[in-house]
Length: 332
Ligand SMILES: CSC[C@H](NC(=O)[C@H](Cc1ccccc1)OC(=O)N1CCC(N)CC1)C(=O)N[C@@H](CC1CCCCC1)[C@@H](O)Cn1ccccc1=O
Image (cartoon, rainbow, N blue to C red; front, side, top):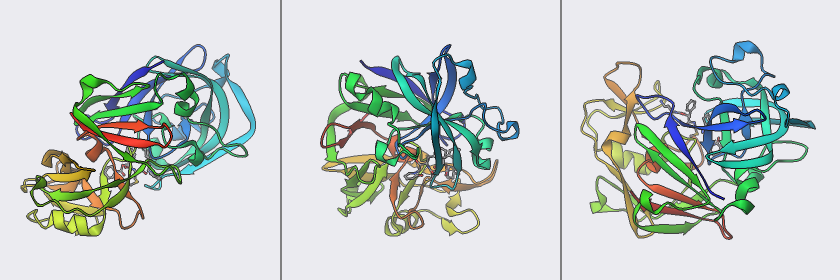
């Protein structure tokens, strides 16, 4: 089996996050979920939440699904890197995305979500695409939809073709030759503790002229908007940007929106990928401001480097969960 589904930006002005239509239950209930390679819980806004915590999101109502079954005594609770959080109980139901159907998928129904989820009106929940070891359901942790689907997939892979201010695609079970050019460069993944961790071979500010071959260990994370890298890399980049400052009040590097920005190149093995300046001129700090927030930010508070959507948009990425798992990057 194979599947293919769109990854649609939730905001038409900046790529804050991407959502993908899925159906849950019988008859099918359609929700738009954020597919996140940085986590491994499939959770949804649900009829079990206090109504004031729902602000326009679609909800899953298990009582209206003839195939829903409560997973007695199971609960979950998750906190993300940006401090957002959610928790609730667990059902098993039919889950479908892009033509792929998984029977008896653990669907984690929210009973409480943090304010940032309530205000993210276009995200109805998440689909974790990390390794199932990260799943927070207790007393028995649950498998991701990808792990449940894997045996029936033509190949144990999924690919991300995210796009700048446009809908991209997540493919499951196959690698679409039409979505990339040249060859795919694969590098090993460390599946412990459960993210898609790989080592980039280095970086260059601007095109790959002055490439600095320093290994950068980081995660490929579709659920994170920006790129978070070591301070040394950030200062090397923003040194080239007129008026750039690391603003405590805005919580990161900002610069005048009309400043000239260099591109940013990162290495995967011998291959070089360039993030265009337009992706790094991320967004005005507030509506209409002449100060822009950078798409490259410091990872020093996170303790982990993150190649988020700003980097993933610059490539076609293969998440290959054969043994040993690996990640592939190709130009497009
Ligand atoms: C550097 S971890 C920060 C990152 N959250 C972001 O990237 C949010 C995404 C977002 C988008 C729309 C509405 C609300 C939030 O967006 C910003 O934080 N932005 C964008 C807007 C900018 N102006 C400021 C910076 C993050 O926790 N991701 C997790 C998945 C997210 C959670 C929030 C909802 C969307 C999916 C996750 O993969 C991060 N993870 C990765 C590894 C280990 C643990 C962990 O937890």
